[in-house]
Image (cartoon, rainbow, N blue to C red; front, side):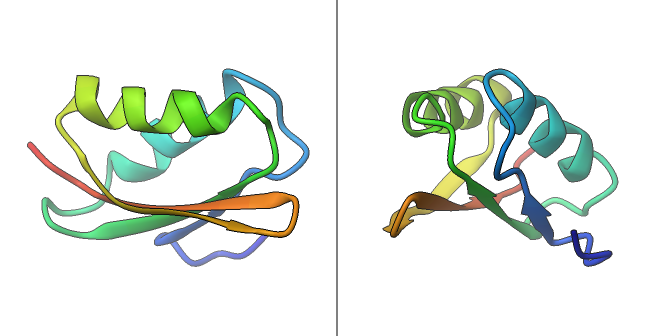
Length: 77
């Protein structure tokens, strides 16, 4: 795992951990900053967009890189 506050490697984690870790990683970021999340939990494709909508963040992109989903989230509120 990297120390970059704008990157989160959540591969190997199952629901709800990718979302919970993304929420925690977003807290210290400034509004408008982005967080890139990598996850391989099949539920993440549903959970991440739902989390962003509920928390007021923008899901900038959601891509698949092999077995890994890559989400870019722009912090709102």
